[in-house]
Picture 1: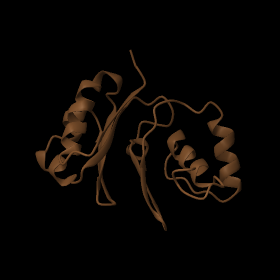
Picture 2: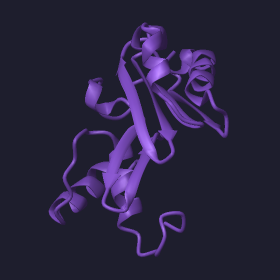
Picture 3: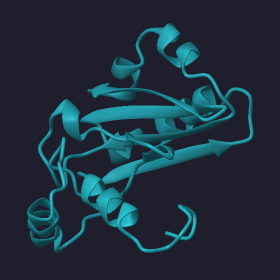
Length: 150
């Protein structure tokens, strides 16, 4: 059974990426097509993602060691929306002039195709065909002043 996806995050621990890895391992049954983790090292986002099981994507211990920082989010994926390519494996890192953001999302935007067309008509550029990227475009276009309010 394809259960959709699994998301796990750790905040405020010096080995956040490793704990996120273990959390995702417990959720592996929810996604076996791809995996990824992004860590936050004092505002610098570092990510690793790939196709396959978590143990395949992070088969080299150095991949986890490279993900420094005390915060991390991770995702194990079944392709429920978007194709099963590396471009659609989350978490995504978005780099903006006022800071970087990592996002992973579990679920489907039912009106994603029409939202994507509207955003593209307004000049948005997409790097994947995931609804998570559409979600970030919508968040960034919010009229709220701060990112947290968006």
